[in-house]
Image 1 (cartoon, rainbow, N blue to C red):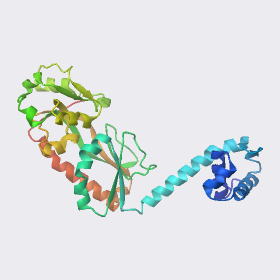
Image 2 (image 1 turned 60 degrees about the vertical axis):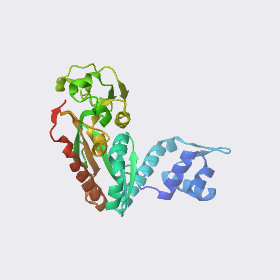
Image 3 (image 1 turned 180 degrees about the vertical axis):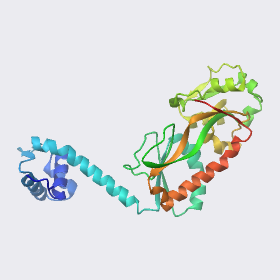
Image 4 (image 1 turned 90 degrees about the vertical axis):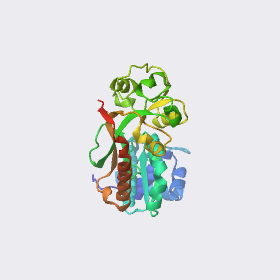
Length: 310
């Protein structure tokens, strides 16, 4: 008995045939004739010293050896494909795929993309917006911008910004509610997007820190931060808005944040990529641009009483 593996073509033929349970369909997938595929399967069986398929009348089924072999071969080809794609990306300094949460993508990244495109016309930027945590070593992603309390290990991970919340409203609504005490009578918009942190960055905590006795049990609730901001920008009411999502609206004057008290979450945004990838030209350019944009937005912290919430 030897541990020497059979030819890769034989393993590929077995993988396809085991998935389809059909030599004809496997041959079609691999763009070979059924006879050629059958030859590869026989080669593998000779190498193994036992059959991996039972040939039935118009069908095939796996033998016990085939059932044992199938999962490892399938996983091996998945790992090989992923490794190949990762190696290919190392030579690609033109396309940059970035994943971030939907709210951060729509409210922070997307509005700034024209500026990035103007500064770096040589880079083709692609977004993969979603809440699913991707594996940047496995998935076709170059950079991840993640929000949370943990710190990833085994990757390049750089803090970008802390998130803080304060009442935000349109100029028209702000004209009606000029002091924190006036918010007792304001329609409230609740952003529940940070509820997963299990911290008290909510209206009750803000009212307590601002010294205002107010009923915060009423109002419209949103599970997504961008939806809560959109509601406030439509004039629906006052939102305890996240600065990470509201910066552009604040810069443009569509929202105002007139009161000094701000609640700081224990979580933060981080820039993440595979170790060593931070030195690749297009990744480094994107990181430098993100940091520059974030630094410009820090002016909104001036004059505020930042309250750390745990």
